[in-house]
Length: 627
Image 1 (spheres, rainbow, N blue to C red):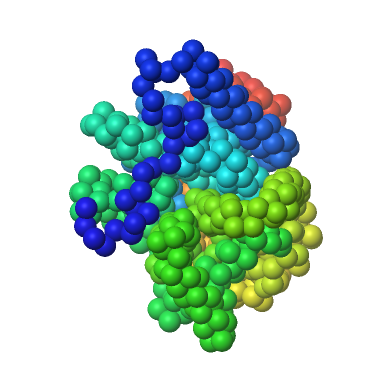
Image 2 (cartoon, helix red, strand yellow):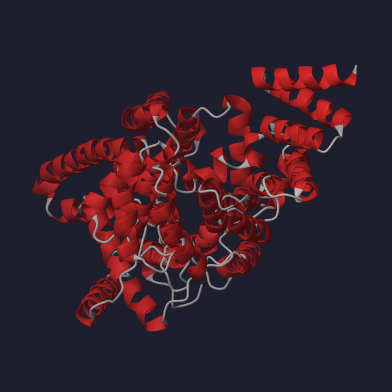
């Protein structure tokens, strides 16, 4: 072994008490054999009790999500407005899940899990939420079991697992259906780690496969876990104490290759989807240091948590310098204590390293940081706290009752705070209203709250939120478009039109804004002015059925444009064959130009889909005329 490995890395790996006796079984007395068997049974019972405690306490916090709605931030993209997902498990939807990028992410295993949810539970939002809870609970149990097996410390492993299971920072990952990718990748992460601990006990290709397979599934659930091979190198140092350079690196080369491939693919997909945000390098670097310190603070004092933290328009140099100083100071402390307390360096590097994909060096999205990014990195900090406290007890035994009490109180406090935080996820209104209350200038929370209120028919309540979002972020075309839609829903098209025009100027390819402007003009009686906007919406979004329908209506009211209107209604029916209104309008128009047989066929189709007495009268008249 090379000389640069610290002495602790050469020490024997700690074993659970039940495995520590090296005396051959045939030389033990019956009394000694019975004593060891009793100790093994007690350890198993203790482990079982911890696992049951993790399950029950996690369910006590998260059972409430079984009655929660989907939220209108990404859940629409991943589930309730996604036609492929709503179809359930079909050959076409499975093929789509394996190849599609959703919201700038290629996550086929996650999308397959959503398909399975719909197949089993339909669109019952509560069941989709509870599946997240199941994966989070399993992850907490796996975390305890792998730490218990690797370190031989049941109490410390239990503390880490309980805080992981109950910490409010993890509520976002668990209570948000769209973050299935977080809890699913986390489950495979911990399963792969458990497989690695077993692999190191007796290395062979079969056991290594049980590391690589869940890692692959985890990458296809959420590629943030690309740092997995790096984490294994840390575990080789502590607690596994098997670091041998370069052997421990070379055995992980297949995993490193998987990580490299997943990283390249993720960057390509996100860049192609426009998810990579252009922010100056100096600003990004400053935000990286501030985010690291923010995450530490939120772990230690988890209050004022929100679904979205706006990226700062400017960052004070002193804040970035102070955050950098904190990071360097802790890093220096971990390096100084490397030989005597390797868990400090391992935990700290676990925290710093596993956050790298989401820390913002390559900025994806517009958030400054996010609670969900701490799902796996928190384990490193918790390990530093747990084994650091154990060292304090060794040095000052009288502190044991106080430290044990602090651990229990911490878990209880996390449980209470997580229960309260989870309650905010009941629906979009409670979620975004809370975000507005605990953050400043949160344009996204204002916008999404307004969108939800608009959807619920509360346009008057939505308007103030859209106006606030427009003040904060005037360059996002969706905001004036939505504000205009609220005004239009209240019958004030005159006030809505300037907002639609502003949205189109900011983003000419925003199909929804063009459609909304056309709709407002058409309902105001100006079909000639509306037609170009419906056509622009269709150019920007081919397959926009509503735009084809409204274009058909406007064309049908202009003399001599009936053939064009017929083509638009036919386009609607190619896209949505069961559209009763399109069948009815097309039938009426065909009848007006003398194509009676075709008209009757479409009107009959409309009646089969949705019976309308008015259509019956039209049909009766057409049939009477044929006699």
